[in-house]
Length: 189
Image 1 (cartoon, helix red, strand yellow):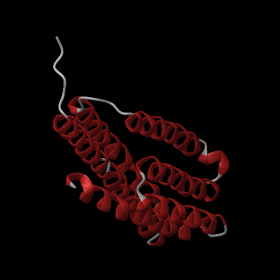
Image 2: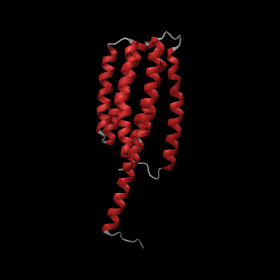
Image 3: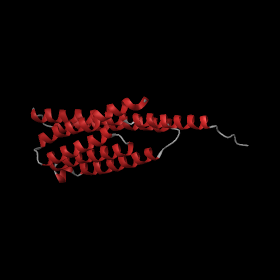
Image 4: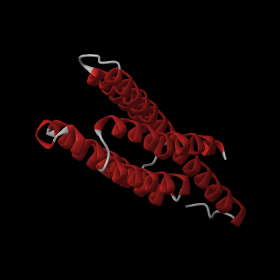
């Protein structure tokens, strides 16, 4: 025979579930920080190498596979430790999975599109991912970060390539790093 929960026990269970959900949302901040700092470092390094006349300034982007591996490890461990997968987890997985497919497609064909045309699209994609994530998580700093990325992407369309790198760095700082720190700080609220 099933035991009936008291009102107090029911409220304690609901409170525990809300706390766990808040913590898991806050833990998403680690992904924004990882990717934010990786892109920021790569974009600024590319700019510096380009300005110094280095023959292959694009090599700074070789940091991205390292970030991908780290992200995969963190995601695997996070998923392995999760007891329950929520609709938020599912929505975020689909969003960032689709983002990754489009990003890889744009970067793969950037030789045909031209780097000057592809980098603004990448910045706009950053905005899409952060804006939608902010909506899913109901976290305004990500929403505002997404809007800032869109503004940066639009300006980048009209800018020379070297300025696009700086716009990308600024957009990623506002769209990923600042919200990532704020989100991560909420993991224990």
